[in-house]
Length: 413
Image (cartoon, rainbow, N blue to C red; front, side):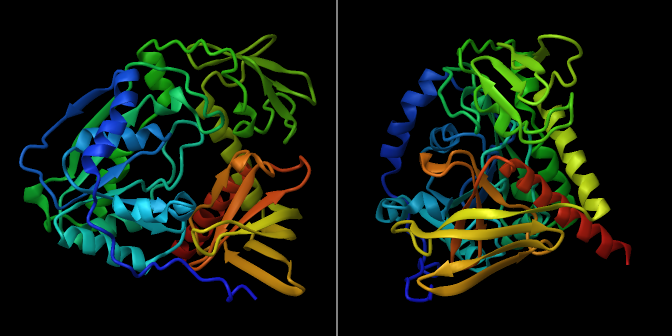
């Protein structure tokens, strides 16, 4: 049924990056507008080939990376939906295609090819924009990859991009004084001498960041009048009454439609209750409380969502193919998507033990609302739940907590 659609050619070798000077010139306006400050530490002697890891908060990341590393040749790992309608261009500049949250042997081959040809291999291992300006899960498999490649590993840690255009509301808030730190995780003289465990510890440490703490420490005021709008996509559960999926936002306020509790989102990036107790003034604290609430459901074995969803698929990078409605279940077993396409039944199963996370989108492409995309090695299914009794943020948290739950059970045996 789906086999008649050609798949993206993952085996084709990545191009030698071209238009490098043009990408640098295109990055300059953003860099200047946001008054980027760059700090390079212990980078002397580190030249291609090396792996460049970076945190991921906004599209501004790409321009900052292009600017900071110029004139070195960069190949980039890019999600397949980024290639839609521009495969030729992205291949031309060195793009390497990836389906998110899949174990992909093809990608390892492509990374080695780029490094063998004396290039920089740029990877955003968080695999998505950060939901609330803090570190997403970094898989331990990344340290094994870095150890295997036997080249230096460099970190590009950027600050201010989430504050300027958070994932839940991409409006440019004209934040100035964004920062970029460039430093080695594995220095040139350490290549081949470190264990995967030591490399993993260094990677985890390098990826520690908190955008809201950064904003407060630098006293960066954001006066955008719609700065709270969209925040309810991340903070979907009310800490006052405990109700899920009834949070909303407008202007500078976040509020619960169930109990009426309201919080102001201040110019300094903090939350302040308009009446009564401020349960969480720090946005990441609210998010981590939601994680704990999901974890309780997972540990009790009661976590479950099921409902109708609109479905589109992306077998290649030409265009989305609508499949109409399907039925999505996310429970202790993982994801299961079923439905009919062209009169035939289909089923997509992604076990909870097979993936450490799942990719989500808010108001994806402005068509069907919030989205969970389910990736296999040869297709991606974009699912849009109906109604309002769901939060794609909860799917994301649950996928992470389910993976950790089963991993912990395996280790205990």
